[in-house]
Image 1: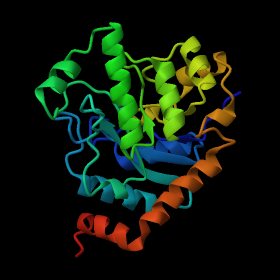
Image 2 (image 1 turned 30 degrees about the horizontal axis):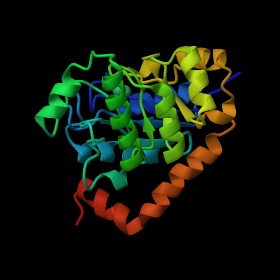
Image 3 (image 1 turned 90 degrees about the vertical axis):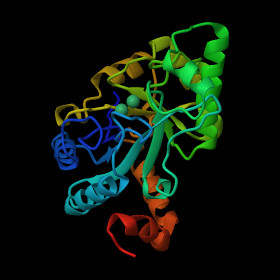
Image 4 (image 1 turned 120 degrees about the vertical axis):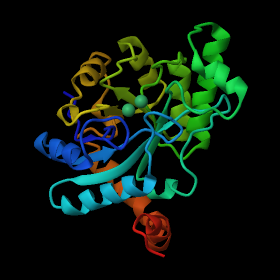
Length: 268
Ligand SMILES: [Zn+2]
Ligand SMILES: [Zn+2]
């Protein structure tokens, strides 16, 4: 039986979710979760992207402090894959202030050049060469960017999930099993697990009522025989996963943290 103790993929009004940061945090507490991340859409998305990193991070830090005795709150960021070379729109100068950066493929984001625009605007092709290019792009982004996970692999962009699982295992990054976009088949999940990938189960909640709703993802993971030990946010792994996030906070150090968030708080 898979028990998930933290939701690291939730959206708020800072992108196109319906609830506030506080609404999502309260919902996570009601669900009995030990941790929740707010992970709004990357800034390269002209319609859904976070409009102000300052306001976004300040909001999360405020709620994090107010609810510190009830739940761990983290700042996340769901970046966008932008190029065939694996560029991701993690904002320069801000990445250090984000506890849990990750990325996924979303259509209609800003692309650095026409070749990327034409490839990613209409990625309907399931031809071997298109799938290979897509897989290479996502693998490169996992390897090169500070992202810690790829969200909903295969959603909107056909990829070779077993090859991606190998790339994720090699770069020490996680694959998401997304409850809202169940792109993984049971067979694919089984293969990805055999390839050595680690997983994170996320709700991808766009409203507070869906925070911590992992049913579709858990059902599939259980059918695929995935062990809770392979899932970073399972009840058995949550302490060590949270310790790694806290370590990331410590590593960026008080000075660097203040430098980055200083702007958010209007400090010098
Ligand atoms: Zn997404
Ligand atoms: Zn999302």
